[in-house]
Length: 93
Length: 456
Image (tube, rainbow over all chains, first blue to last red):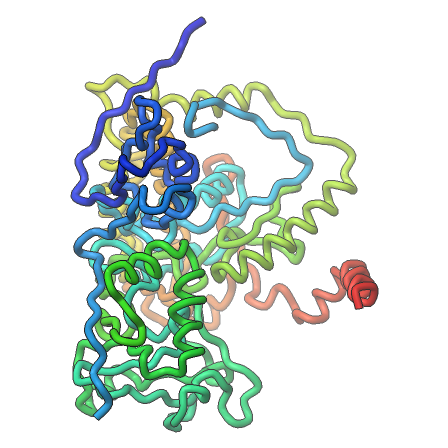
């Protein structure tokens, strides 16, 4: 039986939307399943966090963070250019 | 097609509801941060429009687009993540760079003194409309709003502006920052949690606005989007298209209006499609040759050699540039024909060279092929409307007359056997809303009324 072999090449991207903490991740791959933009690939090493295969295609929805069973194992980070500024309030004069 | 495995699947149905959102990435594209090109997620790019076009479905208002406003592309910020007083953030207290509060006024320009008044209609007004596509409501529906930007500058208010929730009653502050920002659109994570982790406290901080006024960025005239009730699939009172058995719902309908309309039309189209399916005899036969041809079309990019291939990103960039050049803020016949010629060449010469190494790439390739089809629909629709139009945000330099009586109708557009067909339909084709709804939904209304009595 013929088996189709697919390949994947890591792509350069200026942003790093998803940051894993391997000490907390249990490698359950729920984040890879839930990603609506399909940017995560399950790790080839069992128990390790998924590969952020297509970081430029992240929609920054945070579904991966929400579905993660271990708090803090995934962090969503907006690109530097997208961090809106906030300042202390100015008291009413 | 399963986008993880590439497995080809065939579904049989008596009736089908298409609900695949609205087109995107037609004018806006950034190959580095593709996921931030538009307001909606990456996969919402008008595939339903393209499928419908290939099947001969009729479209309305596809010539309409607006200057981009709420995109997350490049210069913009995360949706709901800047200081503003619209939509999710209505009716936030706004201040200028000095901390001077910006007044809210009612539709007659009367200054409102309390936060509470911002949520009520003007004296004698039954209700007002806000949010979604309601950027410039008619006087009858206009609600409280902060002073016009030009007037603010004339009075000496200074940029940048900020949203200052600390000046609002705690209950209103918690509604905006907690319920609205926390629950709308995406998840709690990108704004509510992320900003909280960065140290934002709505009692202690104010959040900056960007651009002039309240949008989160400024775009150029040729950077356009399908916003403000854009074009889409034409339908009858049952949300049925011109193709037997095919229904439509949500942002795929013409003049759609985001989540509320999607929920309402989804429920309605599902009910009507189910009724029609229950009344029909059998499932139509499928032609295996059609399935074979479609499978060949879908999987073709997996067989393109590396040395001959081009990427989906390269084609998306070229389409977006072509649309900005030939179908931007101002259009005319010669430009539109140039655009069609260029996109036709892309279709003939570049589409066969699109190359995928895996099902993920294949999915993206088909999205861009659909973007190409949608762009062609927009060009054809723009050619068909031989006037300019204010409600359609549509300008033709060769037909500058704005909404002349001869053109006050829908232009329905479809493609049959490769030929573009148009026909006209009166703007009020749907008749009186209450009368026509009740005529077509009497049994449902009776059933619902019965259900309510039982529940009571």
